[in-house]
Length: 286
Image (tube, rainbow, N blue to C red; front, side):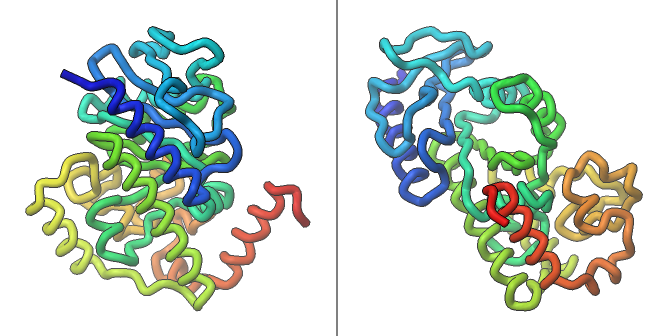
């Protein structure tokens, strides 16, 4: 039997981790956990995730309707995107939404996290595409998120933040932490002249490790949107036309339809400048 109070305490603990790691500011972010087919615990709106206690946590049904909430608390309006994940991915037990600094910078710049630069990210996280921008609190976000759900366990939300999901709360949070660590390493390696990516053979070796471990979730090791058996870890958007990759926002910025050698020859320093410029503009800084 599910101990709801213990899960509420776990949600509060993960909220503190997210807040203390600067993955959210003020009242940003939200967390949810599935406790039955039609019952979900979730964080409330208008509350800092770093200062929650169990009585803050709300319970909703599969449509996001309130089953139980203490006076003064109600679910976040962004519970809609959580519910879409649960609807389309029955294997998922928890969803985490945050605004991690580096990951969100890539989301603002329109650049997906697909470069294979470290074993842990390739094996455990997989590729992280960008779901097109949707207005917060509307159905635009879940509607634009939906097409990525069968293929990925994490997405960047264009000009918004990041969303991760997994079998349980700790695993969903760890994916968020991994996403941010990967994004920070990728950004800093670009500053140093550009990352050295794994080749196709080494990527396949890492995929085989994942298969051997029988890790849960969706991943390019077993699923792929692209043609000819390629995936975003080894095609970089160059294996298809613009039409093929319009479903991956950010590829239009990251060399869609251009030859692989042209992609490799691009000026990484200029890319860093563009990322920084877009982030500063979004913050109202010139």
